[in-house]
Amino acid sequence: MNISHTTREMPTAATNTSTSWRSKPSWKEIARNKSRLVSKLLKDYDKRIRPYTGVLPMDVRVDMLVSNIWAIEESQMDFTIDIYLRQYWEDPRLSFLENEMQKTLTLNRQTIDEIWVPSTYFFNAKKAYFHDVTTDNYLLQIHPDGNIFYSVRLTVTMACKLNLQMFPHDVQTCTVMLESYGYQATDVYYKWNSRNSTGDVVFIAEDLEMPQFMITNVKLEERTNIYNIGPHSALVAKFTFHRRLGYYMIQTYIPSMLTVTISWFSFWISPDSPPARVGLGITTVLTMITISNSARAPLPKVSYTKAIDWFLLMCLVYVFGALMEYAIVNFYSCKVQYKRERKKKKAEQEILEQESEKEEDKFTSPCLNGSLKKNESNGSYRLAVVVDSKNPFFPRAQLNKKHPKFRFSRRHRQKERDDLDESDSQPPKKHHHYFWDPYETAFMTSEPAYSVDKYARIYFPVTFAVLNSIYWIVYAPDKMIF
Ligand SMILES: NCCCC(=O)O
Image (cartoon, rainbow, N blue to C red; front, side):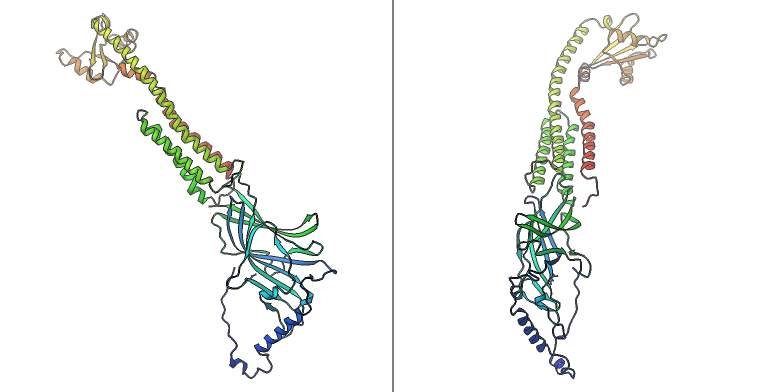
């Protein structure tokens, strides 16, 4: 809506007493003349009868200025629109001779009640009201040739069938359909008015901005609706709305993705800290449920699945999955701990038996000269075997055969050498060092619980990223509007 500001001069006494006042009619004369003209036009005028009745069907041309569109209400499946509805028609009974005093008549609300007006109504209106501040918002102009221009300001809430399968990536089309209530198409025919100065028919106010939508198209149709009482002419304006994603990004998508990401932190927390892992898991599940509820709250209870339902379901499954993963880890962890204890006990029993035998009998032989030491602090065993200089591979092969649980260890080499040789005055002999921690051996041999965490660290983020990409490709293939 372009508004320009101009100043104008009011007629003054000086204007009326100028030398040319006799040739130009005074404003009082003009007013009196117009008053007489209106009375004359309305005398014998029967507003019950339409123009051209019994002679021709008449056209009613329509255009409109949309000054505002209030948010589309998904739960109610409607939208509210502020319009200046403008109707144009010809009524030869109201034509008059144009002259200096008789130009276009601009009249007020009362005159509308005295002339014939089309019985226009909104087909899909749920409720509507006229504006009356500070006076009734009506405009009526009668042109000398009998053309009438009638404008009225309305706020109408219209039904709009929404398909929310793609919500919130949806594009909605809402219609404004107006029709003649009382006249059949053979009497009154509606047409979109493209005869105005711009050629536009539905003007959208320049400053109209919808917080959640963007109007991307307006399509116009003229149609005839067939009823059992006969055909009625109608006009349809179809507004296309693209939903803006910004709100849903901030309120739903980003918080959900962050919640899912937080749930993965559990995979890096020790399985031996159940309060930490269970607490994190349950918090993220509850957070996801809260986000889902608030995202769905304004939506109607439709029976089909919406895009956002899939996304929220996916996130919920992931946070639930992270909690379930801990249940599995915990189960295996307990099982493993039990087995580990048993293995450790068995291993220690074995060692005790070995220790009870003479060390040399067990770990030394003419070809395998070894020295076994137990680390009392952690229960591990270390064995240093003198290497046969002629055959350096000999002791390891021999030991692997005799004591397969011992592992060659570089880690303890220097320490062992110091321990073994400190009391030896001879030059140090070359040793191979072997290590066996019965506890560690039992622990390392079966650790499915820890493997589950290790796999989860990769599996959860990768699959979530893949599913997310599929979601955005399927549901937001076109441009996204924020
Ligand atoms: N000042 C109200 C104008 C009405 C209309 O443009 O239809």
